[in-house]
Length: 485
Image (cartoon, rainbow, N blue to C red; front, side):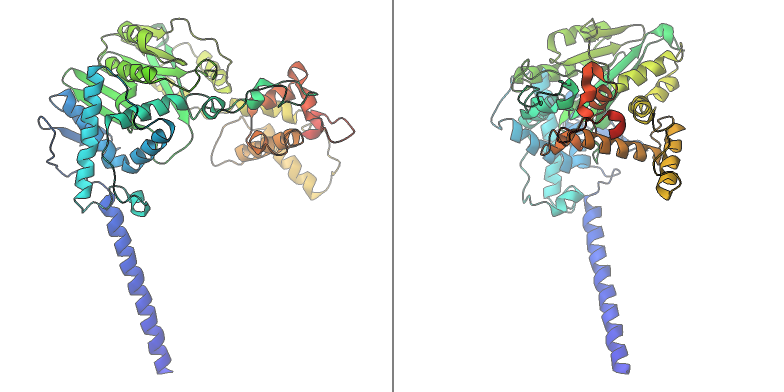
């Protein structure tokens, strides 16, 4: 018995020691890859000292005596904080655009990209010397044995990939457009059915000074897209000798895509561009113009100066908005006509609620989490169910059904993460779309597994006879949308 006890004790101690050593090794490797923001560096390639100060959110505030050193530093901190993301973006861009392609850009942009590449490579050199893990915790399990040096061409291709990501998925991936060969002949065409979302959207809206509490314009910018960790965006404060450029940069590109200097703030709206209007995606000339425009925006003297730059260099499918202390300017000057999205409808509703906005009020509009999709579709879906008794009245199923309908009836559409109503609504929407579309497209799961609110609105409101989509083609009776709901 004593021997058995000793064996179990030694076995237990061995397991504890193994777990402790393994945990310590993992912690050491991970912690070695996490940057120390208090560390000082001496690296080659700088013309003078550079200060990189981090605030409580780890946003870098970079100051130097020359623009080249500022761009060097933003490359350094991008690699320091987002090395894994940088390498993934480079691989994705190289898969889309030839690695040997060169673009002709303005000298100021060329110099900025060269300095940025030198900053990224300075961090790679520090990582290769050892003692820093692999530069990023996720690279500890990556199969890359060596990391190629960063080049200005890498930044150019990432910028081009970003512009391509603003196009609808059908234009990016060569999906067929709506045609009689795809839509069954007994179904009306609903353009929203085969519409695909871009990887990211840029949106912006501005208010003149006569609608603000301070009398100066307010510009609000929105960048939306798929969730990612870390974020696709990187806030930075670049303090040049000529003034600051503060805003959202993208790892791989040294310029603030949405941001401001001491005099001007700028943002963009992206618009869908049909593939036939821009075959093959953004051109190399558009990419070069886009980067040149961002570099000039950082040095703009006023809003009109910024829009004059945009007039010559704005890529197709984008609108530029700029404000200064007195003026709201846009290019093109006439706002493009586009179909209103549910988000546009909600923004217009919130903007119409008050005549004067403070900065905090504008931020409140941006932080609004009420879904106009839910507020629009739910009355169409539940209009009969709220007032019609179930055939299973008196059963547990009917009790649950009534509870869910009552919850949805008193719900205002707010996407509260602690409430069940958003999950109930979107589960219902997904099931409804599958019921409507699976018989027409049994193998095209992408059409009926992901909710398409614009298509459902057209069908449930019977736009141009679209309610016929609710009929199951394989059955003899003609089903209605109320039955499918």
